[in-house]
Image 1 (tube, rainbow, N blue to C red):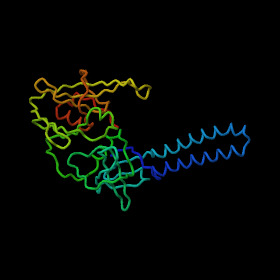
Image 2 (image 1 turned 180 degrees about the vertical axis):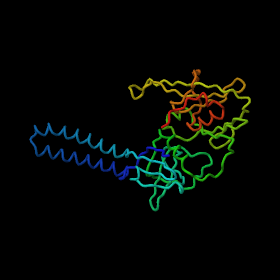
Image 3 (image 1 turned 60 degrees about the vertical axis):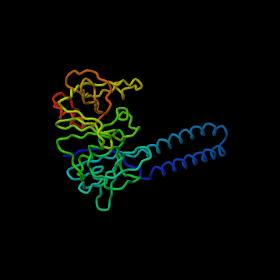
Image 4 (image 1 turned 30 degrees about the vertical axis):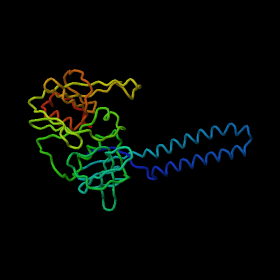
Length: 312
């Protein structure tokens, strides 16, 4: 079975070289324009010069902005290997995969997936950290070859789940550990993709932990009342068919203890919902990934009510 992911390759020239060539090209365009004005008649120069400047500036902005973004790359996981661009970019075995960190000036939780095939290396970057217990053995680096956008956090994690990376310690299989992300941080990835904590769902209790692992609170499962619902976030600032509908809806689970809502969780995938009518709830404090959400719903015995997204 083959699983495909789409990422972006780093420009071959590098970002600094691209912008340097762009600046030099603009300077050359100005020099050529001045030469045309000096050689041609004033009337002809007044007509040609604005056209030349507009066409030159627009052309350079278009070419170099597309070059700086990087081209799309397909990553196919097939069995125990990863195929880049249907083989044109190389075939890398997954058996020797390892994880490291990516140093970035703004985001504090970027991960590098290292693959190699002979002397050839492939470094895939993505936001977020791996599952708890997965070994991050390699030192941090400043560069990468392929990257997932911040919006593709779920795709990068799904790729990591398919790679057999060594595990330092396995949590007890009966306990489900899920990373928590603040609601507004999840909706605004530019604020950073670092988790804000973890929730552990075991057979007898539910516990909330800080990002460092310190226990914040816990409650026995028998004392919990689970409320299903949806949260609707209007976004009137967005218009046009690209942003239709003009609202974002998230499936929500509220955990009540002694008449108080102790924890509210949501899922970022707006295709996920409930099969039956549910109440409109307040914005959840935390968001979880789609795999974690499906695990929580299954552990609570609510899978029959879940409306899952269609398969890719």
